[in-house]
Image 1 (cartoon, helix red, strand yellow):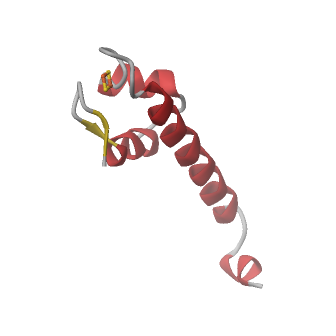
Image 2 (cartoon, protein in one colour; image 1 turned 180 degrees about the vertical axis):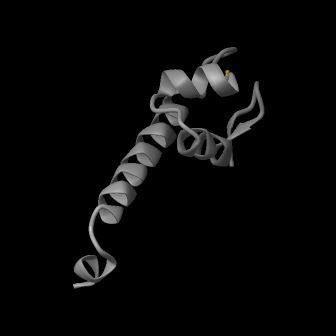
Length: 72
Ligand code: FES
């Protein structure tokens, strides 16, 4: 889904940017240009960033435990 029409940025691109090392909306904006023109997408873009960061954090903490421990 397109998040930013001005720059043609999708939610998938935002997620990829986070998995590749961006750790805030600011990083994503600098790397993809999202929200740098009309700014209407900023709210949604921030939401996607927040959701993805939460997701990435829970994946990281799941990896910190052996698989058998998490399965219970
Ligand atoms: S829709 Fe993202 S800057 Fe305009």
